[in-house]
Image (cartoon, rainbow, N blue to C red; front, side, top):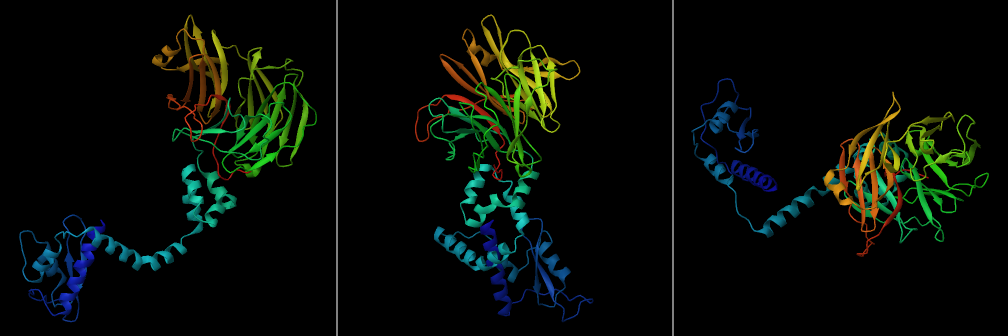
Length: 467
């Protein structure tokens, strides 16, 4: 394309030079309808394009005659047109000539380019940048201070909020390095190794839940909560809870609106039915209390199953009686559903896809083990199997004692860890496309040592989410 444009410029220049020197093409009989002072047009036709170019021609020749002279098939006009035809032939040039020509063209248009880009609408600029892939966006920020400051712009944050949610990422920690996160991007199938400096160094901090691009952490002693954006390192330590709970707790998180700018809530629930809700808008723990008496206590929660958020409602997996416990973060209402699980099921966990509740677990019969997916039927409150892992993958587990752990679930995508003495396999499952995919192993940055994933949670990456 650049060579064609260069040839066109050269062609026009030679044409103008010939016209100024007084060389004229053979004239056609003048049209009676055209005046001697009016200028006609020559149509320069390139056979590779459907459109032609028209240039002013000062000879007393009608535009129609000139166009016919060039466009009529089978005619080979002489004079200047033969000369123009030879100009259109490709001319071989050295690489040095091409480089110098491109450089001079760029330098000549530099002032015009600056003027154009200075007038580029800022809202359109933000709209374009908000659609960049997350890794490309952070490379883009390094260009200048103005672009780096986009993450603090309210208008840019609104642009990001109005876009459809991206494929979730997975924030995990490993057995070898519990204080450093390993983040997996399913779209590029790459691992990233972000560092959150504000997290405590001398204690183990576990990722428990997420909402709007923020991840909620809890130390292993169940004392302190932290919220952070792993991409931008935006960080907040939540205030101390009103009463201490030393037993294990389940943690869920939801947004107050469409983004973190509207605030978020964090809920923790203990085995004895005690619970608290933190609201970032007021920065206090509220709604302290105990689960109502119409729900059977003690609450035997399945702590291997992370709570699932659908809009403003959190769903917890119950072990005994088998079923689901839900809490509405807006109304503050608790509900319990007694739902028997499928037979021969182990290591099961809740998941969500849109507004559907899913159950993921290991189905073991004799020596055969396979990962299966069930969907909760709203009318009957029963689990119905909808998919299972490909048989060729299940054969790898035959005769082995396999354990499964869910490393997060958001937006119909989940990551599962399958472990045995001889194997540590990571896989993802998309509940919309029903696609199973193997996850590449996580290795030490700038090294070859393979890391074993301990736990994790899924989150939607957002460069504008603020803790």
